[in-house]
Structure formats: C-alpha cells, structure tokens
Image (cartoon, rainbow, N blue to C red; front, side):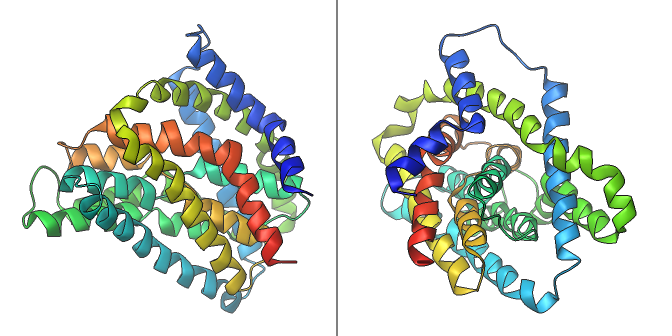
Length: 323
C-alpha cells in the first residue's frame, strides 16, 4: 500500500478516530468524562489481555527463538534512556532531574501505543509474533536506568526513595505485574481452558481499546495546551526521538529475524514514551522535575504523533526493509 494511502487508512481507522473524538472533546471542554475507576479497570483489562494472549504464543515457541528479541530488548532498555539523558544534558542544558525524568519516560514504554501497533499490524494482515509482550515488560525497566543516571550525576541519593525501593515499585507496578502474570497464566492454560475465556480476552479487545483511546484523546488535548511550557527544543525532540528510535527498532527487529509485523511493533515500542507508570516513579524519586515538561512532551506531543503519523511511518520502513 503506498505511503499516502496507508496514512489515510490509519487516520480513518476506528481506533484513531476514537482518539481524535476524545481530542475534540478535550479541546472544546466537553462534559464527556470517564470515571477514574472505569479507566483503571480498562487499563487492567488491556494489559491482562495482552499478557494472556502473549503467554499462549510464548508457550509454543522454543526459547532459542525468543532469546534474540530479549537480548535486543535489554540493549534498547539501556540505550534509549542513556542517549536521551546525555542529549538533554549536553545539547539542551537540562538540569539532572528534568533530563532524567524525560529519559525515564522515553526509556520506558507506552502500552497504549503498543496496543495500537498490535491492532495496526493485525489490520494490515501481518500480525506480530504473539510473544512481543515479553519485550514490553522488559523495557518497562528503562525507568530504573534513567533514575540510576540521575543518582550517579547528583553524586548522592536525595529527593526520594532508594533504587532498591524503586526497583521493587517497578516490579509491583501494574504494567509488569499484569503482563508477566498474564503471560504465565496464558502459557499454563490448556486449549479447552483457553477457549472458555478467549471470547472476553480476544474478541472484546479492540472495542475496549477504542474506549480507552477516547479518554487518552481528552487527556492529550489537555496536555497540548501546555506546548509553550516544553519549549521549541523539547517539542522537536518529542517528535524526532520517536522517529529515530522507531526506525532503530524496526531495523533491529529485521536483524534478529522477526516478521514484518513483529519488526514494526518493536519499532513502535521503541518509539513510544510512557505516561502512566513513569510519572509515579518520577514524582517519588525526582520531586524537583517538572511534570509540565515530561508529561507534556510524552503525552501531549509524542503519543498523538505516534498514533496519527508515526505508526504508518514505521510500517512503511518495515515494508521497505522486507521488500
């Protein structure tokens, strides 16, 4: 499919249109609102669904086939936050706390972007390998890498909990817990057991994702009003960073032998920036960092860019590599 046609197809997909409707609701200050408990329930459902289906696929694949992906995930978990931190410190003159907070968000993963990428690949009839959730759970640890950089740069532990406590909090976080636990349950489920629950965890997934993206559109619209606070450099960074790391992820996926859909999804994972789990860790460990900087960049700029334009771009890169 030509690049422009692919872009139009993505922009007119129900998932992206749900996000756009939410953004319109946010801009016009609509009364539309989803209760916080409902959002938490939807988030739990989406993470658990991905974990369960990933576990089913993972159980049928030899470890040797997954090992290259996990090795690539470890390398990227280290490379992305380190490169982001050094760039913001040396090129933009950010202080340690704000540079580390931005690095924590971009070094971690947006599970919603991952959900959208999985749905995109399925819509293109080239689904990714089912074990991709394993690398999502692994790359959640990019937060810890960024916070460790902050500790080293400051030369002392101050302004928050110890790295051990942060690691424990990351492990207890809903992202890693639900993805890892879901994969374990999915791997252990027998075929008859899976058939009993698959209508809920497979059949309803895309519809529930649309509701979640409706809320994400409203939240992103509120952050977009703070463009001026992040500055010109960070706005450019919030667009350029996902493009660079998205391409790196696609190329890495192709190099380790993933399918076209798998390489595309790995690129989308690398391009994404966390805005759900990482903020909690940064508020605890980096209290002087400004949420107006790291949240506006990750949620207000990078997330909508990836959803609207980034995914078709990474798919086109994958299509070019796999010609």
